[in-house]
Length: 312
Image (cartoon, rainbow, N blue to C red; front, side):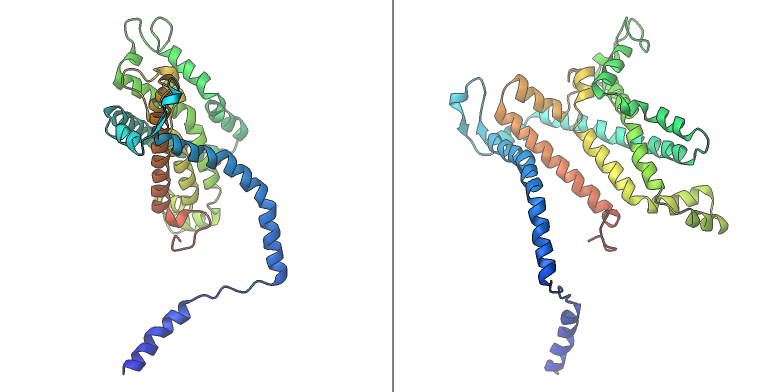
């Protein structure tokens, strides 16, 4: 009885194993050639990307002030402890999350509407797409200065002479979010429009024949088939919004409680010349970005391009 049980339980495991096919000599030679051809690009990427990250990690473990370079000293994780126990870091993180969540959410809704408009437009399609994409074609710093002048008393046309919205935390953050939405919604729309092209028209026609309303076709047919494009659009914009720097730097300079984590890192690195604390902030931003990417990929697991049905 015991023997039979062992045989029965062992068979699925053996059957479930997938043997990797043995490569022929020609296939192995092609694989080696592929690695050799990719090696120069991989080395360059490691030199450009990996070395700065490793060096930043090393600096974050030291007490390193550029004003006193001879006093540099290895202090382990003390810089991380100083940053994580500082109210400045948590305030900057909250401001960054508010800007990121609100701007990306609004951009997704507006971007979807603009994507549908650009995709469904029959006449003057090129003109419509060009007009919609104009804000994204403007350099961020130039666009930010335009928003700054628009909200500056005695200069701007959106504010009266006796009000200064950029000097108040709440209104300044709202203007920063508005500038982000105006600038990057076309980018979101462009990515989502590419996703709309993945939806077969015959599927929508079949749903229409079955009596599905426009909303049902959009919610139950279009959105599920657009998951890969939605993942790319939301992931790119969320990571970009979390690292926001240009708009805040130009509009407020981080004053009045509007500084983000990137502005905080900039102040410590280039104004205070504290390479240890500044590098620690940079590594923490890198960790936050990695966590955001991991969360998105887990939420949209099955929609990741190249993934299997099970999301593996």
